[in-house]
Image (cartoon, rainbow, N blue to C red; front, side, top):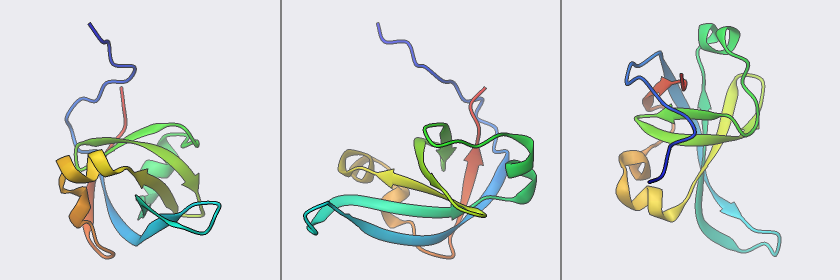
Length: 103
């Protein structure tokens, strides 16, 4: 039986805003099926927890791994299987999303 490495409590801890959505381009300059979302995190969430590349955050209930950290935006890659099975495929700039840190 698989044991998850992180757990979430199911309590929304903040609201982020999608600031950018783009398709990931590979090293050969080719378009992939991976989508990158950059989400603005509220100041209180950034101050309360040390965010790092490789850390996990639930976005609209979907566990995502941080790929990039900018001044106030956090970047995530969303792979085709996740896009097919969640509502993140419809995420657009300006949209509000629920955020939750693992326990």
